[in-house]
Amino acid sequence: MKTDWILILNIKELTGISDNKDSKLCGDEMKKLNSINDAFLMIFKGKIMGYGKMKDMMMGPASKDNKHSTIIDAKGKMVFPSWCDSHTHLVYGGSRENEFVDRINGMTYEEIAKRGGGILNSAKLIVKASEDELFDAAWKRLEEIIRTGTGAVEIKSGYGLSLETELKMLRVIKRLKEKSPLTIKSTFLGAHAVPTKYENNKEEYIRLITQEMMPAIAKEGLADFCDVFCENNYFTKEETIFILKEGIKNGMKPKVHAEQLSHSGGIEAGVACDAISVDHLEYINDNDISLLKNSNTMSTILPGAAFFLGLPNPPVRRMIDNGLPVAIASDYNPGSSPSGNMNTMISIACIQYKMTPEEAINAATINSAYAMDLSKTHGSISEGKTANIFITKEIPSYSYLPYSFGSNLVETVILNGEIQ
Image 1 (cartoon, one colour):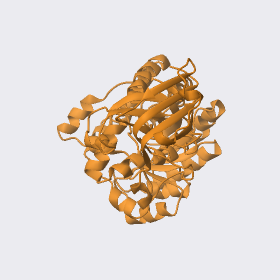
Image 2 (cartoon, one colour; image 1 turned 120 degrees about the vertical axis):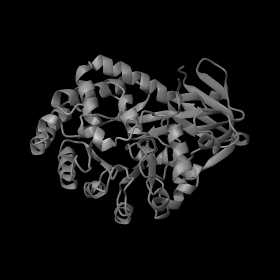
Image 3 (cartoon, helix red, strand yellow; image 1 turned 135 degrees about the vertical axis):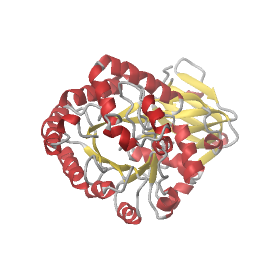
Image 4 (cartoon, rainbow, N blue to C red; image 1 turned 180 degrees about the horizontal axis):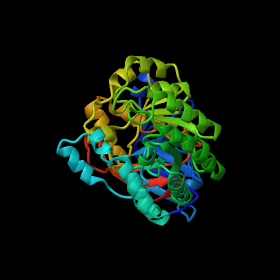
């Protein structure tokens, strides 16, 4: 539904308000969630026009019931900025539930990968799928995450592992950007794994990534970011730094898969390259925390992956208590986190990592917007920002969102000022 004005009245609590001064929240700042009770929110032509207490609302064109305005009564309901999901792999060719069963029966993620499963399994499926098939499958996943409150999402390549198939994935992401109401960022992740063809000649595959894939991607303008899986048996710290620096030359800002399965130097590589984020962090240590505290890099946790794989929880309390900013993303992918439900990710973060609801909501909005380079336009209720918000069902408090894990309490979604 498209109208010039949307006026939301009688909001029980308008949550996630920012005066636009903060691009991210660090440490103790994350403990405060700014909100207004008994509020209104005004949207005009896709942007947040104004907000405040109902008693202070000035009557204007938005309050008139005409074809150019939509009025929503949100009595008993809450309004949030849409979730920003800064790490996903939701363009893929097929599910991997067989590996899920293998893990139940005792195999490790590394053992499955060594026999041709994991990322290499997804790479085989990408080769078989057409662009249209990949687009249609990803479109359904986008519709799914919209319904659970996500308004911005990052999508990676990395299941192609060849020039042709990496380009295929990134072109699909470009089509999704052009059609979807979601704000979408794209990431080149050619350094996700080493293809079997190059298992004894990794240097040649890195040359392929940096000298052939990157220039072709840059020529078509297909990627906002470059990412590397810095991990034992994948890419070393030194290789990660080299690849990221080549990505910078080709116009891609750095991101890193860091310290997920072991401590492999991914955070050090990310900070050395001024990465916008380092993601996973199950094996982060005190030295890494010190490095991140003195950097511009966002620490991003992926609760779905750690939960699904049974990994150690990242030490989030220690990270926040030492002054770090923390973001939450879903890692939506077929192998280690087959869910893009950010409400579930927030619940896991509160239940297992002992984040407060305030910290988790800030991590999934303003801080995750930072991790996507969207701080100026997304992640908070701020005048002039893109009107990406959702209205809940009637709930008693914002803490009820993580408390009621598994329930979708999102009732109405507005993206770019349009009711979906």
